[in-house]
Length: 240
Image 1 (cartoon, rainbow, N blue to C red):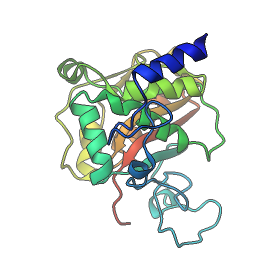
Image 2: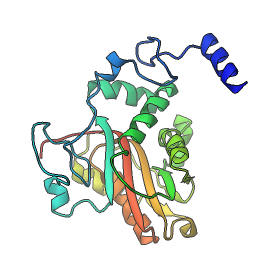
Image 3: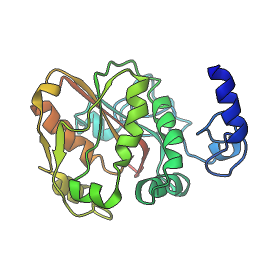
Image 4: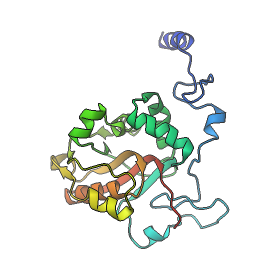
């Protein structure tokens, strides 16, 4: 009965590629042509932060970028599905700022896929919190929409209220150092009992400098989290 109902819905509302409208097998999937346009992050990449290396390099099983080798990433690991460029930007920005929620399924699935090469346990999936002022203006937290299916996939708790965030001006066009200073002290753990001893996966739409993940990691570790990971749909890639 369920299979028949699904087939009926697919007949009425056929699954279409959210970018070009071509028929696909599953709702939220990209067609092969649109999929190929993205700069998906694959190996070789930094084992710790997921920074992509040139494809022709053989760096061994667990290579590290200079930043992680120098101990600058305190999270257990970070992964991103693709590079932030003109293609991914035209998905991420409308989803984030223009209520184009049709992209959430392809984004969350890509994020789950980019975690498949890591063997890890997770108790809590936590979307990066929004300040109430920004949440009221936007109407939704885009990270929460991405985190929900990820939590379901890992059979983990979706935690949206253990950490609050103070409002600060947008960090667009700031340097990495300015971003770090801007986000310092904006997060506050309001329920330590839900954090203590937990392995937490942080979820965001884009990682620019990593400052948001790093600051959240700092306050969560202070509250007793046993492990903190990060995943984003896309990430800015600078030469290192």
